Length: 206
Image (cartoon, rainbow, N blue to C red; front, side):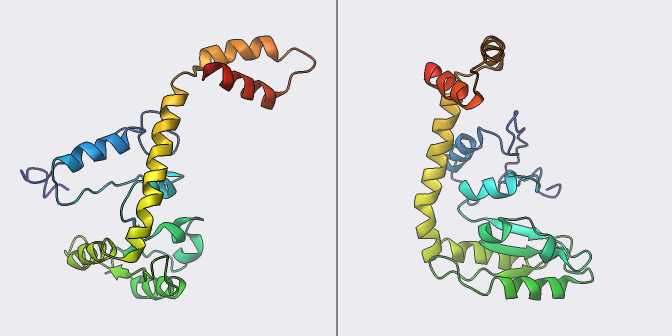
């Protein structure tokens, strides 16, 4: 990023999560669409790499690239649930480290079955510092976006984006202060039930 920071053809923007628990900003959909309108060749959204954001990005990105690095040799067993399912492309970065070849082989075995649209998830070794494997990554991303898997994914992406936009608008009417005051009144009652309370509170705010 430091190399391209002053490049007039590259726009880099840091984005706070703004209280979103998943790790992705609630405005990420709108921001990506604005940048898309600027006719950039490619838009890269980098997640924090932890928690729910790893899975959430699959509902936003046309192609999800999962980047792993070789460390102790058993990384495949420690990959979080859901990561294997969302990857359209796997990248083994820092491929000059010991264990990179073994990690690549293990991932290839696990991803041997094609995804929807008959897409075989590629596992690519690269070294960012040596600029090795980058062109192959870009090539596989473009190949994925011309595949049947990409075509099938479009309806899913639109559904996820619409769901997030609707969810954001509905939650705007709910404030913790109002919720706290309502709970303070309702909780002492002998027939109080949290689930009934939440359902009623939600109906009153819609």
